[in-house]
Each structure stands twice: as C-alpha cells, then as structure tokens.
Length: 165
Figure 1 (cartoon, helix red, strand yellow):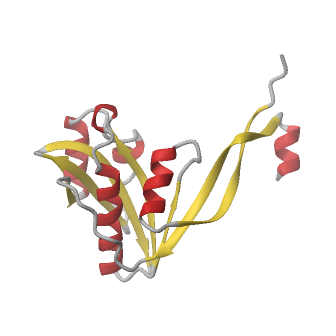
Figure 2 (figure 1 turned 180 degrees about the vertical axis):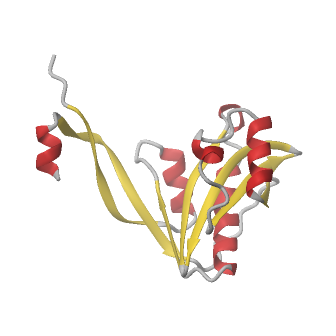
C-alpha cells in the first residue's frame, strides 16, 4: 500500500497521526455538566441539524439514518442545540464516531457529555468494547476521549500530496 501511495505522489505527513482508541464499555467516571444530551430518532436528529446550522458534519444527515445499528445524539444547553454525535453498535462492539460541536458553542463540555452518553447507551445495548478515532491535531477531541479512559491502540498513517516547490 505504501508503495502505491508513493507512486501516486503521496508522502507521510510527519505532523499528523490518526489514532484509533479503545476502552471497555463499563460506565465512565461521571462528569459535572449542565449539558443535556438526548438520544433522538434519525428523523428528529435530521430536523435538529437542519434548524441549527453548523452543529454537525455534512454527512450527519446525508448518510442513511435508517440503517440498523446507528444511534443519534444531540447536546443541548438551555434548549440550544450545541453539538451532535453518532454511535454505531454491532454485537458487542460500539463505535463512537462523527461528533461535531458548532464553532461558537465550543469549550462548554458538549463533547465530553456526548462521549459519556454514548458510553452509557452502548453499555446498555450490550457492548463490551468501544472504539473511536480522531486526528492527533484535534487536541480537544483527543483529550476528551482520553479523559473518558480511551487509550490509543494503534495509529494510522496520514498521507499528503508530495508537492515539490
């Protein structure tokens, strides 16, 4: 694979890693927050995202929300939607993915609350192992996962175009 990437003009990015993190699905340490996280149906989540611009990645509502295994969450503060996240469950494995907080809503604890809620729901659904991923340059995301007792189990290489000046 690396040979193909090099031949295609790509090179490893020395500054960015893409860690995959894991933890047992046991309950996490409680977090003190006034953020209210609600699990919503796919259609409810889609409506919230439509009416609150900038709180989700574009694929949050474009993907097929009716697919089995996906669970949708929205974080609220005083009724204001701040952030979104998804959980995918297959058997005893849960994947915490696609989390996003709106730019003006950051640094209020929404992501930590979303992580905690997804851990709780995954455990209730019978998950034993939880997995998540983030880029190393997204320090807040990585720190929030580590605070929730996720540990790096391996890192994917990140490649970029090899453009010579």
